[in-house]
Each structure stands twice: as C-alpha cells, then as structure tokens.
Image 1 (tube, one colour):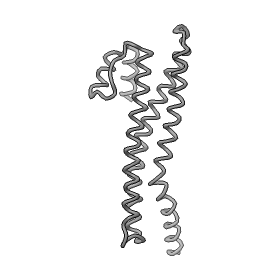
Image 2: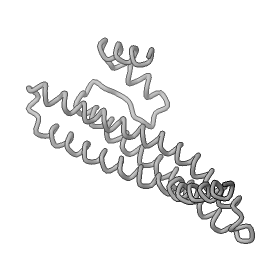
Image 3: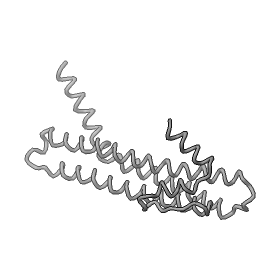
Image 4: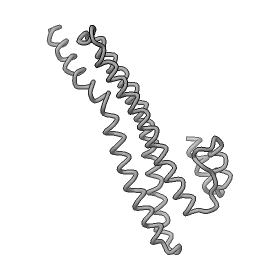
Length: 172
C-alpha cells in the first residue's frame, strides 16, 4: 500500500512539475491575447464614437476595466507560478534524478524567473495602454502609470461618483 501511494505521489508530482514551471507562460499569454483583443475593440469603438451615445462609452469603459483586471490577474498569476515553479524546480533537485548534474534544476529555475520578468513586462504594457486610452476618452484624467504618485494624481481628477466607488471598493 505504501508503494502504491508513493508511485501515485510521484505520478502527481511528475504531472505538476511542468505545469508549475511552464504553465505560467500559457496563462500569461492567454490573458495577454484576451487583453489585446479587448483593447483593440475598445480603440475601434472610440475612433467610431460620435460622443453622443452613452451606451458605447459604457461598453468601452467596461472593456477597459476587463483589460485592467486581466493585467492584475497576470500579476497574481506570476506570483503564484513563481512560487509553485520554485517549489517544483526544488523537487527536481530533491527527487535525486539530478544529484550529479544540476542542469535541470537551474534550467527550471531560470524558466521560472524568465516567466516572472515576462509577466511583469506584459502587465505594464497592458496597464499603460488601458490607462492611455482612458485618458483619451476622459481628457480630464491625469497621470502616468510609471509615476510613483499615480494613484494620488488619478484620484485627484476623479469626480465624486468615481471617488465614492473607489471608497466602497476599498472599504470592502
């Protein structure tokens, strides 16, 4: 019974290791593509917008909010896959298959760190595009995502309803 449990455990670990180490690339790329599609649709709607139809404006802002949510999911996912990838890379070393040659361990660890950098860059690009489009739609908005005081500048240019929405979300 112990041997059956041990082989089941090894089978599960063998399945989880590549997912933990390389699954983040798929996760990040899928969300990045979805974000780009939503951004392009919002951009096209903005170009065609006659500034009269409020429903079009609401749809654009909803799509932009999804883009921001996806960039946040990419960030959360990058930390999750970083932690699980380091764990899985460590299991490669512990398992004993590579005791003499640690190349697999360092390759796995490098893949995890490379994914972290990839996710950070993709997330910044998505956020920059979404914020810049929001600033085009609402010219009263100010701030750059690369500014350390971005949140303060952005909130200073929000109207009362937006500030109240931020307050309600922050309170929850």
